[in-house]
Amino acid sequence: MSTIPVGILGATGMVGQQFIALLADHPWFRVTWLGASQRSEGKPYREAAAWRLQAPPADGVADLTVDAATPGRAPKLVFSGLDSSVAGEIEAAFAQAGHIVVSNSRNYRMDATVPLMIPEINADHLQLLEAQAKAGWKGRIVTNPNCAAVVLAMALAPLRRFGLKTTIVTTLQAISGAGYPGVASWDILGNIIPFIGGGEEEKIETETQKILGCLNAGRIDFHPVTISAQTTRVGVQNGHTVSASVGFDHRPSVEAIVDAWRSFKGRPQELELPSAPADPIVYLSEPNRPQPTLDVDRGRGMTVSVGRLRRCPVLDYKFIALGHNTIRGAAGAAILNAELMHKEGLL
Ligand SMILES: NC(=O)c1ccc[n+]([C@@H]2O[C@H](COP(=O)([O-])OP(=O)(O)OC[C@H]3O[C@@H](n4cnc5c(N)ncnc54)[C@H](OP(=O)(O)O)[C@@H]3O)[C@@H](O)[C@H]2O)c1
Picture (cartoon, rainbow, N blue to C red):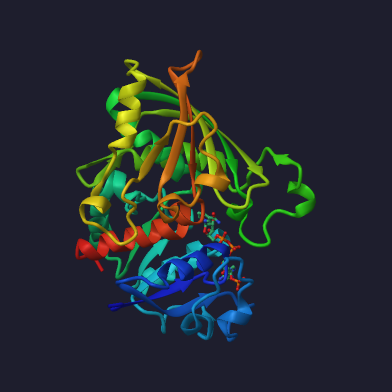
């Protein structure tokens, strides 16, 4: 039974569309409200959105009229896929009006009182919400990470036990990560763009440290791993690939690392949350995997695929990881956060 009404801010965008697709058959959440910019306001959703996903939106949602992105008519729980240029102000207005905002945008991720969640890794970081209550917020803001930081953080989380010290990473990021219409075809066809704006490299470096950090007396102690990131945009439709080298205090064996990845589970699997993949990480032993076209949809887009683990002559090991940027890196991640909050009695 779908019992909890939810709204979507930025419903017309790439991430907003994934929200609608993933929530179509959700056992707990039912989409009742859609918000976007003045460009879309007042139009039926099917006219307002340039729908890019294969299966069309369900009639019940496609017929909803898009509302202004202002609090008032939306249900208490609101997912946000707003453009970051406006998310700061709009999400704050919703939180001040008493909404629980589960956001994809970068604006509040590094705020000391805002949980930056990957529930398999840091479900306990939800306790930061107590600081929002103490600060007198009527509503709450919870965030999920940058779409490339998710892939890296998932691959690194099981390696913390080996004294993870250093990471050098280069990303190959899909065009869907730039929203729609995103990067001009003239720029991306047959090309690689060695720059992603909006502080992408810094986000990967700092967000990963916060995600992997420990909750200590109501605040997060960041993980001490040093990360150096370079980001590129490539002509792939969906799926961010990460090429990483890692250094440890004491180098573990290949078998120990693969076992750490394959046995990795977290609170979502324990609670059997509806969006939780059975295996948050799969290790693929074929020498030419993971690949976006073959592996990005694993675990309904919620599994991170890792492969090519081998010795690195500079640091200790190197490997490749891949994750779905608009599902595990965006809408699916936010829905998993809301499912965890529901199970923990926080909605
Ligand atoms: N794409 C990814 O892989 C990904 C992954 C993780 C996080 N994110 C983050 O998620 C957010 C959305 O990304 P996206 O790729 O879905 O972007 P997008 O396709 O450009 O969509 C942006 C959304 O924001 C709305 N919007 C823009 N200006 C607005 C305004 N002034 N008032 C109200 N709504 C406004 C747009 O509505 P209109 O259609 O009406 O203009 C649209 O619904 C961004 O913050 C992005 O950084 C994206």
